[in-house]
Length: 346
Image (spheres, rainbow, N blue to C red):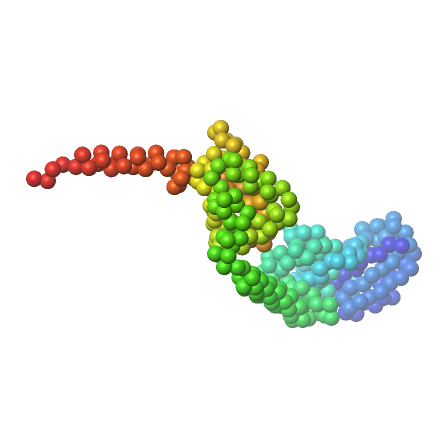
């Protein structure tokens, strides 16, 4: 059985008249008229195609009717109400306009308003933004486009209320999400120990209870970290350090609490320029885990490694770094040159 949609019917059209119009083209199994449109069910597909071809734009009771194959709404389609439609606008013209925004499942014109069913809700929202309050097909006043409420088949006011309610709910959810984040931050701040306590806990792990200064101390430290429980406890301690609210500040605080600039000067992130590759060290994995935990997972490993690379790159130029003494001498020599070049003030 084939279902045919007949739109733009006059108020006087009856089911018997519609059946009589389609009967010459084949067997009619069912015929219904609903307000300004109707549906005709024919047994044979070829007969239905012929009826559509012959009767589309046919004059019936003073109205030019639209005849097309009914496509049927998908279960999750989004129904839009389109108001103030021009009397000259056809189903196909209206469908084509909405198809600029996405697939259209069904398009029904009912006198001066219509219902358009779109496949995806995001396309429907774009269509509303693009077409609401715009002129179309020579209509002197502007057409309206809004979500159709489930309870309403005619009034755009109810459809607009449904759309407004959706927006209000979304705004409330956004506000609630923000409040939850603020509460979590307050609870986390209350749980965090004092910085002195954190450093005291860190000294328990470090050889000689101070920053790592040499490769021997680093190797010894990483042997201790082979145990998963020991590694987990260190990650917990490092994650509670006061380092700031962004990846860079947290990385710098953790790395400078663990290693001297002299030791960090021997590394680069991936072993560039003849240096050792820090990314292959067990300590690097611990730092990655600690930073992720400190930020509640709101960062990527690639971002953390970028900041680690920056700390290692700058370590030689800071106190204790391999270049720090040279830089100090260079600055001193430059200062002496400037003093010698100053002319006498006679």
